[in-house]
Image: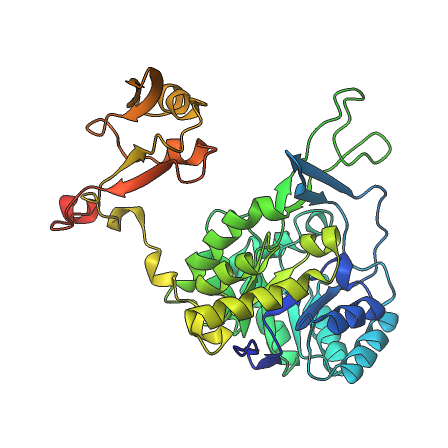
Length: 414
């Protein structure tokens, strides 16, 4: 079997599957159960000045039969005393010395506060600290969380403070609630961060109860924006991870977070530059044991592809990601429909006619009308292929001969 162990900024982990800082890592007994199940590491629920949480705290978006396609939360950092958390961290690390134990931190923007708590965590024997510059609700209104991560200068400053105080690896957790993820990432590098983790949750309001007219989640008739996570955010997270993985100024490892539910999700993050992945919503939905399938699935995938270790695929797809201006304008695909597999739902025609480029018409085949593509008009947009419910019915086929290439940059000289 392939070796799943990874080295992340000097932190050894038996596999790349970590729990993210969230309710599943709220206390020692939970983290220990997770380690027993197979998780390679865990990021402890954020420590700081204990807060008072509200009730209720969660709201979800379902999609068809998929429950919790997206999850919104307005829960804040730990509500448990710092000394209790520190004791449990110390005990947990003593019991599980080979597992990665990272402690998430968030305190007020004062050098003494950050340095004090960093030293306290180092004394527990934990493997590293993660600076929570991402929380988009509650704490940001107090000048913490995303309020720090949205200002590169603050990201750099606090990272430097923590690096002054501890020899532990320092991971900076970035907020996605920003125009360009590269700037805070580069600021973290400038502050001598050892690694990055992303994404934290996305600002969101999940919806409104149309009977009571109260948005979700309802807190005594009122609601507040919260953090959005779950499978729905994976494409956003993959984009931001890949943006940093191909940024020449970001030279430190990345822990990928956002919508990871299966080994396939995890493999995509590794291929786009992550060394570890962090999981939260899927565990809240299905429990700790999902990691068993993740471990088996990734192991089998690596074996089938002929790779000896998880590290061998990290970043393998990064060079495939580029800017739009570098894409080949001469590359040409068209849709082709296999009538032997067609179920005559006509979704391809409707989608193309009303939502794309009007190139699917009907032809008579043995007295029955079937959709057919006018290839001269087809732009290869993929829409018909995406809406078709019949497996293998519509294929996107390359029709250029590959002899010429031309990008927008080449064409315009820009």
